[in-house]
Amino acid sequence: MKFVEEIVVEEFLPTFRSMLAERLRDRDLTQREVADLLGISQSAVSKYAHGEVERNETLLADQRLAELVDRLADGLADGEMSRVQALAETEVFVRRLEEGDLLSQLHEEAFPPLAEHGGPIAIHDPESRVRQSERVRSSVRRGLGILENTSGFAGLIPAVGSNLVECLPEATGIDDVAAVPGRVLDVKGRASVPGDPEFGVSEHVASVLLAARERGNDARAMLNVGYEPTLIEALEAEGYTTVEFDADADLVAAFADAGDDVAQADVLYQAGGFGVEPIVYLLGTDAPAVASLARDLV
Picture (tube, helix red, strand yellow):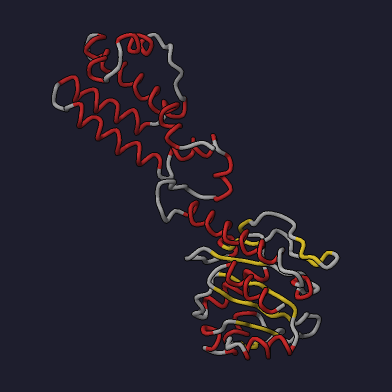
């Protein structure tokens, strides 16, 4: 595990301080004056001056950093900028680079698992995609744990296999939906989960969930199981709202024909079609909730 703060300490600070020390020395400040302004020792300033400190080439090449250093050096050398102001300016700059910018990229290079989330990473944002996606993956793992430990669940798995999916709050496509890579299969009477949840690996079940959400359903998780008329009867007897849709139509058309009931549905199902296996889709607030519903059906 590598924190972005480590990147700041190990990569940014040595590079930034050496650049600022150089600029201040270029403005005829003594080694002691530079040390006092930067709050470091004279020996450290000497190391910077003699190139004895390793610097990050990517940061050195960043024009914005060069401009910041020049501005700070001018202000500190002329006495028009206090050390506190220089610190504040630098802190703001660092925070900007941490939020989906250069330091974020260096962080991703140092800690490759971050790359799995795609796009710019705002690591400190409490609602960032990286935090939300890891919460969703954790939720799917908990749901899968319930299914794996439910004796008899394998009997609900259809021939095409099951998948347990959960989407991000503002999901717009299958890349925003976490699921099992491949499918959950019945292997000798036990549910077999082939791998850790990932985003973008479910096409069918994820598409059904997203289509239901487009019709106004606020469910964020779904599990498909095999269809039996008695299963629908049992769900309705427990007070769940079930809605049937046409297996032969595309999802948008099928849900449009099903009407506004889709928005209120706890269960969606299709009773089969030409070459299409009948399937029941259980909806819920999250993956553990949907898995618990499946457990109750066994």
